[in-house]
Amino acid sequence: MSKAKLTNCPDCNVAPGQPHHDGCDIERCSVCGLQRLGCTCEGHDPQFARWTGLWPGEAKADALGLDLNEFYMSGAYKSFMIKPEKRQ
Image (cartoon, rainbow, N blue to C red; front, side, top):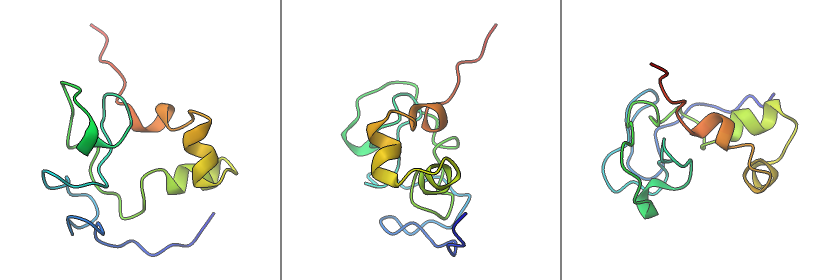
């Protein structure tokens, strides 16, 4: 696993663990898993999509032995970026 240093979001400058500011182009949508800025999904959860200190998917891709492009192209991001639906 990489030993990357946690940093503030490079776009909206929030600290790790904080939700992104509106209009941040790094934030991922918790409904579809894609870039939130270009998404029109309803029901997005900013707390679920908060900044972790690492580029979205970086740690997960590394743990799976994938580079970041493979992580997204394979659809693996969906398992990590999309908030599971609450069962009633």
